[in-house]
Image (cartoon, rainbow, N blue to C red):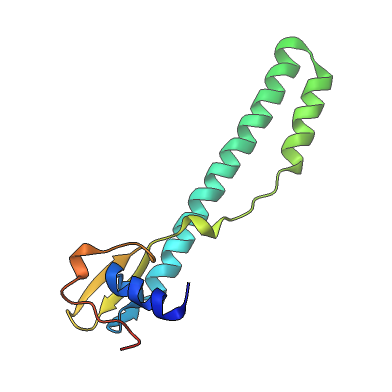
Length: 121
C-alpha cells in the first residue's frame, strides 16, 4: 500500500488517531496499561494457585506424589508475561471539539466524519 493510498484510507476511516486535532492523553493511557497489567497478573496468579491446589488435591486425596510433584514443578515454571497487545483503546482530547475522546486506532469511526481532518493536511 502506498503512502497516498494509506492517507486516503485514513481519511475514509476518520479515526481520531490520524486527526490533526488529537492531543494524546498519555497519563490516562498509562493508567489503562497498569489496570490491564493488574488484571493479567491477577489472572496469572489465580491460574497458578489453581494448579497448586490441584497438585495438593492429588497428594492428599490419592497420595499421588508423582503427579503432585509434576504439577508443582509446572506451577513453579510459570512466569508472568504482560501482553500489551490487548490494550487497544487510546485516549486523548479533541482540540477542535474541546472534549475527551477514546478510540481504537485503525478502525472506522463514523461519528467523527464531520470533525475529522487528517494530520498531514
